[in-house]
View 1 (tube, rainbow, N blue to C red):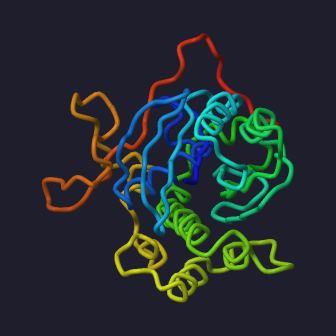
View 2: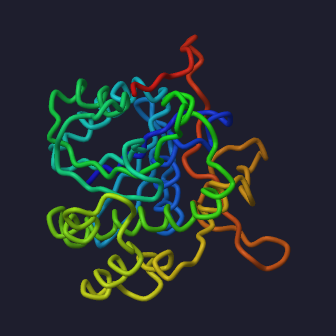
Length: 281
């Protein structure tokens, strides 16, 4: 089994913020692969999925970002995993919006969620997929990541989340090193993501991805239902209509015959008096 952890803050007030792109990517993976057994365990919402023929535990810590390790550490130990069995997905303000970067190890780069996980696991040798959310000139980093995406960014966000999910699938299918060669920008490229849809689609074709398995839909420029949810459109609540997780993790037809996103792995904030999380610049 491998654990794929998306970082973010729980609660509706943070649902569509830049800091929550890790949550959004896990939601997209859950949607694509019909995640089941959705439950809360060890301070995190979890779900099971089979991706690229592998058993995957999808995880969204329900602690606040700064103390993500309080959920990830115990869950990782409970499953008796190795460090190589863990992938963490997070936002990154030092990458332009939409840029992806996959790394096998390294520092937290000022990201408090990563810092907490490294502290609880006692190592920085943990694979991580970073999703660029950029910086805003003259704006505090904390305020930037805790704010919703701009209108222009929201228009592109479904494709970005699709690319991020494609990248996770590629890593699970071909391995970390091979995926890095496809996902990471060429040496010297510093301004924008180098046509990830083309690079990821080519990699999926080489890997023999089955049509309709969810690995290439976003690469064709299609906007996923998880992307709609990221923009605050078409998200559905659980059976009680209160925002509880979907029981099946599958898309729900809407009245017009289309498909809208279900909420995946959504929980409520811890009620222990924790204050709003902060982010080091």
